[in-house]
Image 1: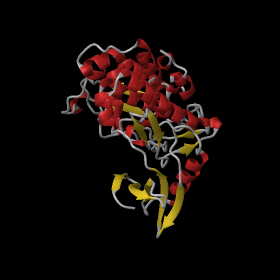
Image 2 (image 1 turned 120 degrees about the horizontal axis):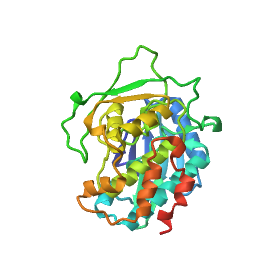
Image 3 (image 1 turned 90 degrees about the vertical axis):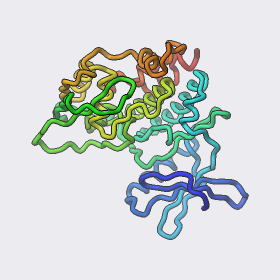
Image 4 (image 1 turned 30 degrees about the vertical axis):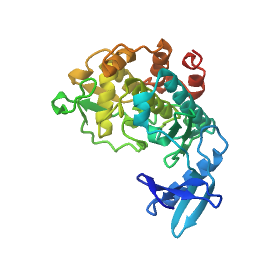
Length: 326
């Protein structure tokens, strides 16, 4: 191992070299990481080997007390660089590669749980990408593919107040909110993932989460590519991100989504008190000119960013979308 090329909460990545003088990337998992988490990541990674657009595992070994995973070293473009130069053709290739990877993961009944640009290594020149980092991934049972039942759901109120307005100036005005005081036991739903890419059901703390959360995250990436803005959602906490989503979808849509998830949404924030902003208009506001993108990309974006999981497109359906055949 030599140069460190990346670092996360649970691991560091270094450049290494095999005996054949081939460069490799070595993921060194932090010693503080729980054994069960390490075992889960390794098990899922191995089960996905051979799937298209999933990073290859060359070797796994122990160095002192550290677990190391060896991957091919691949040439990639930084996502911000991709944002600056990408054409609609580039966006189409990027999203097709990403959705192919996600479809492969979902076909094994696995939720990745942390879809974001830094976990999708992409080479603009070769138009190829590799999905990485399965540290938060989760194997699910088919019976969990539905939202909570009336018996298991816990209604929880989310109240948002305009007097907490932030100082930043994003594309459309936003303000953070807070969870209304609630004496009931806290919910145990998983909230893992990266802020700005978490799906509404994760932010609403729904217990029965599905593969649909990965599609939402991929939709946020598509939105960033079209708007040339990264990150798109910039709040530092889950409640703030919910409000940011509310400024895009409007109060009524958020109320209906909350009801679908057996939650209650209450807001007096002016920025949320409007109908949903069409995605084409949102992109126009971001790039400050009328976008010359095919209508099919906005249709795909809308289907990926549906607030309700029952209405959100699947990876299989997305790959067959008209946008990729135009």
